[in-house]
Image 1 (cartoon, rainbow over the protein chains, first blue to last red):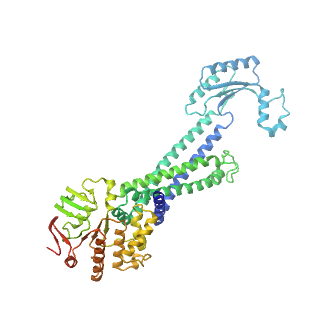
Image 2 (cartoon, chains in turn blue, yellow):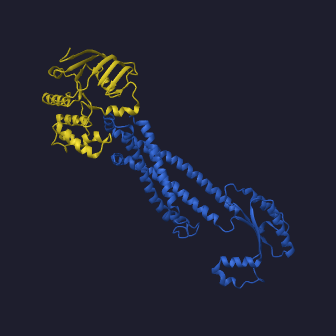
Image 3 (cartoon, rainbow over the protein chains, first blue to last red):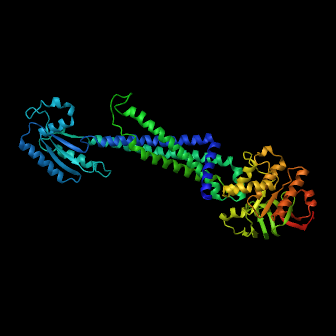
Length: 316
Length: 224
């Protein structure tokens, strides 16, 4: 009972500390919110790009279109050459052959809105070529050897009757976008570290000012026999409250930024950009991660900065 | 009980504050500690509160051996003592009641006990009708009484008063001294650090004189 009372007393003192030093406390919240918001926004944009990229059709394959002029024997030869290459590679999941009609059928299924127009095509005047599709395994794994894809592509070009323009792949695109998102991730991480350090510094100074304004209380508490932890705890609580308030504010702002600003820039509903860049995942998908992430950052910053401030400035 | 055995205290800058002090103060005694500025009075009270550590010798206070006490035990030593400062050190933003209650609150006492003890001790010091007054609404003497109530409320064995009559007129001095004698009669050890000759002479109590870090006189009644 006594401990519960003391716990609530400390929480009360934490809020009192913040209210006594409202300007610096607000500055601390502002810096920490900026840190969370920038990191959160980077994460959401990067993740949306990655998700969209991974769900892009044919991203994990090389497609060889078979020129119409090839005879059945020549096509069979090409297919067996590809199968032979497959045996030498670890990361190829399957190799499939699609006839001209199969490709037409697939195209019809993927484009139901065009079915009225596509109905006019039949076996004789089918404009789509036959194809061979080489699908890779573990394509999105960090360990996946991208070089193997390029080597395979080079070897495919050496197959008789297959030309450079017959080989199609989005892997280079994936590679480029992944490298951009990797760079953005690094930038986000650096910004997280820098902003977190700035936040720690500002919160440390806020707590230091709180200690200064309560120095008479602290001295009296020492004389009366308050324990070290009793004197220190309100300042730790103050730091945690600043961190948690920052997390709540950052979450609210992140919701707004995601649904109204990022969505406005990147999606087909954009009012400032007529081209649809990506399909944005609903904010709900990130809710749990953002809540725990922001609370974690806020709690960490609050505890660490107040502990450092106590260690450096509070002599009890 | 307080016992200094060959206690010396040298500050890091080399200043010798106390030299081979031997002193014993029994429970329930009333003691004046006198001496001019820089004689070592403040150091002596700091040692009692374990604000400073002795350089050599042995110091026992209320069963705690201060030359060997662990850091985490110091708060519990301090709970056996109540300190009244010359400048009162009341909190201006707290009422008389809150000032006294704060001393209990910070050692984790239950609210129910605080509600019971604070009014009792405010009545003991004669401020039963001033619970809700802030320090700036109280006279100097009344503020001093709040400080005494605050020192008493945790039921310490020793009350240390640092120049308690330094800032008040002669009428208030008498009131404060009567209050200290009343506290002493409650069974508390009272240590008054002062250089008010008139007060020391008027009350027939034990007087310990410190000069240049040494106890030069220890007798009952008046100056040496």
